[in-house]
Amino acid sequence: MDTVSQAQRHKNMAAIRSKNTKPEMIVRRFLFSRGFRYRLYHKRLPGHPDIVMRKYRTCIFVNGCFWHGHEGCSAFRMPKTNTEFWEKKITRNQCRDKQDLVALAALGWHCITIWECQLKPQTRLSTLTSLEYTLNAIYLRDHSVAYPTLEEESTLERAAEQETKGYPEQNK
Image (cartoon, rainbow, N blue to C red; front, top):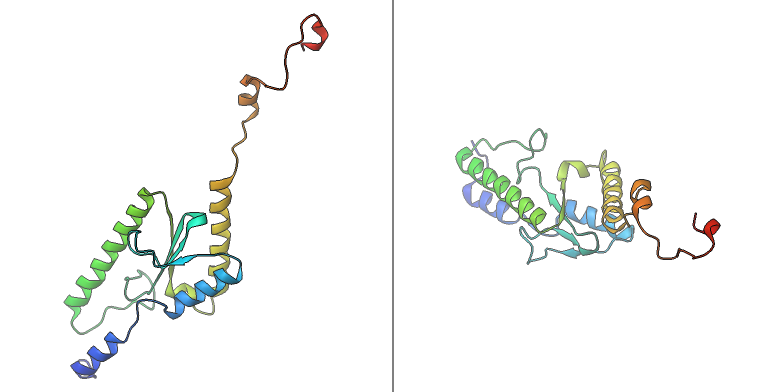
């Protein structure tokens, strides 16, 4: 049984923000302090990602464990009252999240999801460090030059080396 009146419960739930949440601000401050620049809530991308990094073609979603149904997390527990409503709502959120990730991947975007429980003080540093490492790996993979291997190199003609006629020792 709920210990709070229905009007008070409605007021409490209406006060919960969807933008500029504390976990989101932790990630944003970390990224900015490390020199990463980003845009917020890009309206033209599916799912309106929390953080969009165009240079890295990466979208970062900072999800609350309760609202997005983080499986196996101690912060996620199905409410005891109005269970049917909450099951439908959380299931709908999870389905929408999956559809958004698939749509973004089809557009060529990398997607990273950070859960609220991963930003608790005990695990925050490792989570944010791995985020930084992942972003750098994405950048290097997307922007590195693919050099030919030794087998490919032997079959390629070299523009700088021309055959000289009349001197066989130079044609080696």
